[in-house]
Length: 255
Image (cartoon, rainbow, N blue to C red; front, side, top):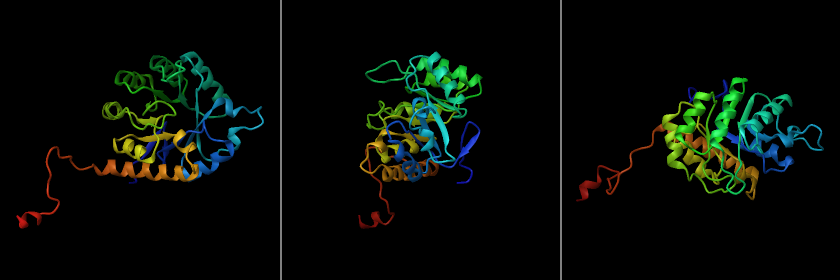
């Protein structure tokens, strides 16, 4: 599938698995990233504090593209400030926008996310905004210059799977940007399901971090995401409702 390139911010990625690092102990990050074959990894700015005792940048394997997030931002202004600090710290031009005010459900503030995306895209950032899957918001993000749209599959950290499946499908069909499912994916089979819908990539964090063997789970996600992409490209067969059809033409001979 040499023509099936995953391009994000002008860069071609071989892997469609984006690894979230927020719940990993620092020594485990390298093993998980390597087993998962990830080429992009998120990081919170507070974990990349060069003045701290442990800097996450020292544990991320070389060659991975960094995707700093704006975790902790409650509005567009705070998100923009965090993104600029991450760039100044040497984390590059990719940024995942997270704007969350709600402390109970941790749902993203879509309107503020659009504002932050517009500001940062104008400054040359490759912006990956995390949003509740809403078509009007996704269209606004595309117009604002987003590099992709990252709809949640389920509430952050829930491991409940692709609860927003129908809405994610709408974005895949209507938005001319990579759709990357973020948050809520709890099993490799759910990541595979997202890829079968036509999503460009999947990001996982909690599902891997809370597994009994995190490295092995990362490898399972790697395989599932690849399988889902291959299935999508193969164009899955039709679904029959309320009837059955013989799988072999010889079946009718016995009647």
